[in-house]
Image 1 (spheres, each protein chain N blue to C red):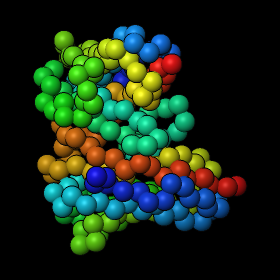
Image 2 (cartoon, each protein chain N blue to C red; image 1 turned 45 degrees about the vertical axis):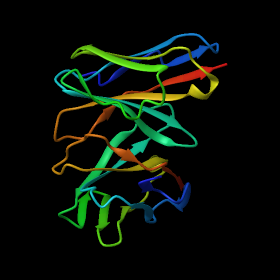
Image 3 (cartoon, chains in turn blue, brown; image 1 turned 90 degrees about the vertical axis):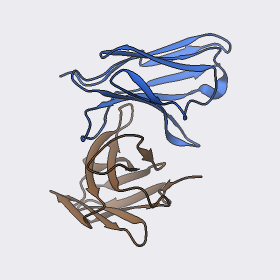
Image 4 (spheres, helix red, strand yellow; image 1 turned 180 degrees about the vertical axis):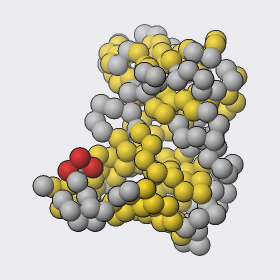
Length: 112
Length: 115
């Protein structure tokens, strides 16, 4: 298996633009997580899906952030409009219940 | 409020010696703990875990110790190797038995193993 696949690996965008991050979880995994890593706050859970249904989005910082999982093999995290303070590395991870989470390589977002 | 704390941002050890990485937690509901290792430009990878019903779990050179009364866990790497140089994240969750709902991470400790 190729593991969790995220795209793009790097994204540079101007403030105010819409950004969409993509994730393909490991086939057969039924849980999907979006995390954000910053120097100040470390790794924070943004949202968690189970069987394609959002279970907990309490970590989503603002209404500018939204996430969808239209099917078991694809999820998106959208920021609209983006701001410089959104600059971070965004990780997607997936798991089967009762196992550890497997992380993708991350998307490094820079908002200028 | 940080529920999982790794108070040492960095640690440097000599090859062959023991590396000890520490982690403290405040939420008494946590009952499953994990260590992840992260190389630059890669995502975190799972290393070892421990359930709150145990106080030690060992996997090769890696041993995790859990002290529930102190709400403290540590990762021991013996012997340390240069390839172990990475950022190590401590994580915790509740729900028992390895459920990975809502892993709460510490900020990480950068381990450097010098040849």
